[in-house]
Length: 329
Image 1 (tube, rainbow, N blue to C red):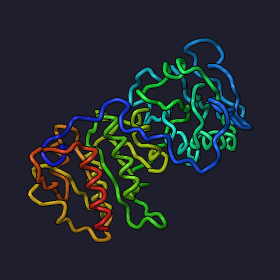
Image 2: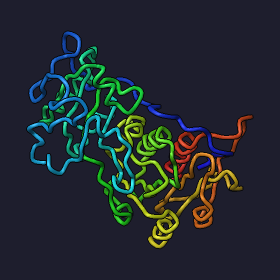
Image 3: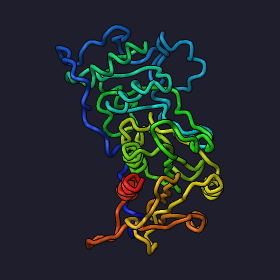
């Protein structure tokens, strides 16, 4: 969305990452770097020479043929139309920890920098990896940073299967304990830092599903996964060919579609939802909602601005709107 009045600039590459994570309170290992527990292997970069992807660990060998190429080669940009949601490379301590906790997709291998100080979240990662029989390799800082696609991977990178996408109809099914569907639609958001921060807020606000356009929008890149702090592992996501047609499908299923638009006269504080299924639509940074999407929304609401600045970026505006919808539900 061009939130409030005009879209703010995106957070940029590698922004919004979490800190070292809370961990689960276990004592930190002695010495720098910490030895990996059972199921983890200490060693250098993947065998086979510079630039080759790491080999799968023994515990994931059964899935080796179905896994996409990972490691440094994954840093080459690929067409989103062919790669689906993405998410094969996960960077940052909290994001990797949630990847293992969710156990939603296979993790091929985890790299840890050799110069890491002990931390509870690193203990968590090692223990979870051992339980899942995922190899943890200790590599040089230079090697890890060369493979990283964010500015601050926090000394941890995981290589995994891509995130699974679901059909739009699947997002319309109510799940126990979640009430009616609460969906978030991205109408062409292109900044990965903004999308990641938005997904983190959406998951915390109780969003049950996310809809992303197949083309002209960012999908789940390493920057998105890091900024999302693991939330991508817990939210179902659908890819659609066109947002206007997806909106019509949602409306036919009884979903109230609400667009956040700076030109709307109605305030989001006046929005009445009750227990209805709802879809919140956010537009791209700068342009906001596209014309067709704007025309097809059931309701258009804006965020009242009281200060001298004329805009919020899409991540901030989206977070505010998600929690307001959650409050109304």
